[in-house]
Length: 419
Image 1 (tube, one colour):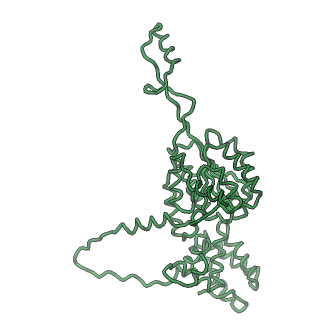
Image 2 (cartoon, one colour; image 1 turned 120 degrees about the vertical axis):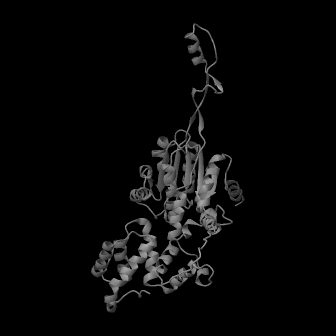
Image 3 (tube, one colour; image 1 turned 180 degrees about the vertical axis):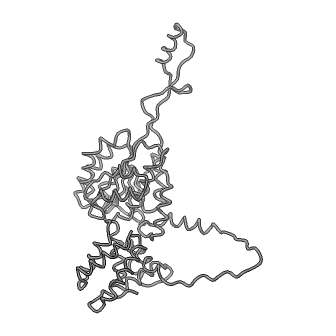
């Protein structure tokens, strides 16, 4: 077990403890190499370690390179250096059959990931060697456990996933599809079996034969594919969900044959950021890294009304043509003026063919639109659905295939009128 926050008498063990701390961060998902660990040791030697705050930020400055890794770093730091009782709580979170500290408070985001990183190196007894036998052994594989495990992962909340579970969830998200039906446009194209007569082509064909009319040419409506516009909330309360949704969005953006004319992606927290060109990269890690570098307000505050005003003013006419479908991913918790938010949502709804709102707060039973931001936004969406796990994202295909599908909107609108 690592020691508590070291003092002057622990200088000989400090470098070793920092190395063990970096290994725990690496197991938790942070990309750390030997050079970063050396820099961390040097930074602590330069900044000193008599103050816990200085010690924390010296390690943070050298070991954290992306905004999304800051929360994991904080959890691992708290578990590793100072709080044995919190470590006990996290150990209990990894073993749900135990009772104790885990019942006192729910696990925070990235906490299970941090706890698994710290206990991953625990010594385990080696498996017993198989006894030699002269007879052939028949191996039977029971796939029922695998199917049940996949079903459990589909229903598991993104925020409560461990590092391994999140990696498996990302692989599952990469296989999901989001097909859409085409829209019948006014333009037509020649089709021998079409439902519409083409009198112009019929007359031109008859003139080539001296006015003889042999058959009536036919035509059909040319299909038109809509755009998909995704507005993803990346504030602090949405960070775990927004990363999973962006993985899903990358798969949708790079999979051909789903029907979308173009996929436009925007993130918003305290400001609006267009990340469409980054989502076009083939490698998902490079795409998300570039998107994270472009959006500087990860895990910050939320100004939904101001960001929607920027979108409606600067981007709506560029990306909302051809009957675009808007996918809004947000918890709706906003501190701005609710009346201004309602106006911007109404303007967004008038510009879109459909507005589908995914809200992770719907994972709670008995959810009601008590927040002012949610109450202002709810009347201006066509469908209101949960967005906290893989199963919820799979349900998007059903919402797109059935225009009358409103999700939970009818129930929540009734609850809103009763308040």
